[in-house]
Length: 273
Length: 273
Image (cartoon, rainbow over all chains, first blue to last red; front, side, top):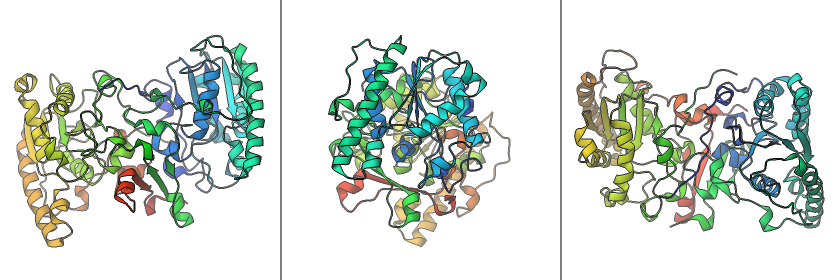
């Protein structure tokens, strides 16, 4: 036995309706989005307790299985970022895109699609208009564009909330492409960028979950800079290993099979047999 | 867009607490149960609208991904069985075991474990004591033992509810082991058994979702005898193909890897690209 926390999901309005009426292939073309895995909506508090909204980019393979966003490496890094601000439970995360981007440039091509923005803005309205949210953090350029598009709406113009765009948590992996030195430089640059954002965000967050002194990042990511996804963020009954490290992969001998397949593998040290 | 229905999940008590406090490896030994995939609790209505409770055996690979029970072939057959009784939404399904049975005989060995029964009986109490449920259907022998164990409790003794044990919906596959003729005979025997149960259950169900004449099964399963899992039974955002046919498999070159892996493959005709 033992008390397990879990995310109760999409119970209250307007979130219940947002999860019943979402755009499909007619808005997210299958050539550029993995619509076949269904939309993945959010992670975090939908009950008014959020103080920080995080805007990510798009869900990937781990998210297709857990049905919550930002649970892979990027999520664990951003979890550590929020902890530095004293935010351990009071956050909610949404993505610029409801479906995983497929192929190169798909995100760019659809960054300003009005129908994509219209639905996303309904989420941002629900999270940011007349709520307790004090700051918004956008992960990377497409997330920034999503926020700016909302900020240009009447609701967005009226909202007063601190805002920082930061380097996407897995940008170093993307830019370095396996080059160890390039990776280290990219991480260092990212953490410099994150430190600036932390210093700007800190005063905006008047009611953190925990009051703690701001400890900035060093020049490299330490193990403590990754925080496991809290149990309370995932649906009931998911095993603990789905909240840490890497356990889902797109595999397949052909391009077609690889798009069609996600292999879920219990990590070695989480095998009880 | 378009209205998508989904299961809101474990919102109300006592279900919220039942999904927070569930037995783990200390009750379900990892040698006999796939505890590594987490518990899978139920499928169907938890809001008092259920008229029929179905007791299944244990979740398998599809259920580990959708986090709802009886969504594979067995679930689609039992969905058709319920439809013949006019029950299209008013059901709730739970399993004898919270975790998938691993290997031969694991289910038998733990069929009478008191700690397994104690937790399961909390679910059956919640579903059967002072509710609108009019009938219980147990799928196979271990499900029958689970019901009998509950029936022997004080709460069970006090409950008045019609009850039928029926042949497990995938028993023909298990017994025939690939022999086509044996399979056909086993299906015919199963459908005879199901027809008897239908005739006994029909008068007990006073408030079906739909009033329809009872049409019994023939001697073989027809395509119409499989019903897709309703969208309203699964969590928000799951793609439609997760509610029909077969799309998850345990794969791996070694026994260890096979236990550790579930491969999810989008069916060919559900690939929009």
